[in-house]
Length: 183
Image 1 (cartoon, rainbow, N blue to C red):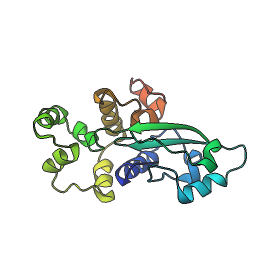
Image 2: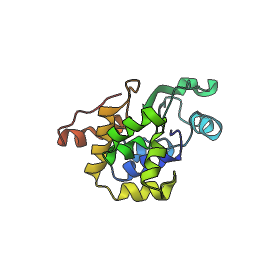
Image 3: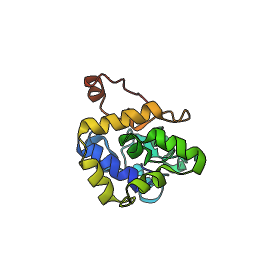
């Protein structure tokens, strides 16, 4: 599950490139869901599972400090809930990718600027939409994407337990001499 569409587009690109640790057959109905909570049609889909089947929910978003609500009628089917954060905002990944993190940190304290605002000043064409995110990421190699994610995991706020790095295939990290994160 993703907090918003930005995270959804990002995960779809990682998935299409084969960078995630799970395959399509392991995704619930072969897709990611842009939602912070399980409700409506998602509850119905979970209810349609076989009696012995269960679900691990992975929530990806900027701030996931809201309590995850397990709907009563599917509570027994939800084995685990894992929060994967991109705090303070998803756009911090782009800031890190462009080696602007130190500059952002200096300005942030003075202006209270969010990563999205900081990034947009350097990329006026930036919009939180599928086209921009796909163009931006498709211009990057797998190695560059992994480096960006690894950079975030090293610079992340102390409060963030799991980063997107924990969703990457561990052999990709080992091949590059990087330590993986396990949730």
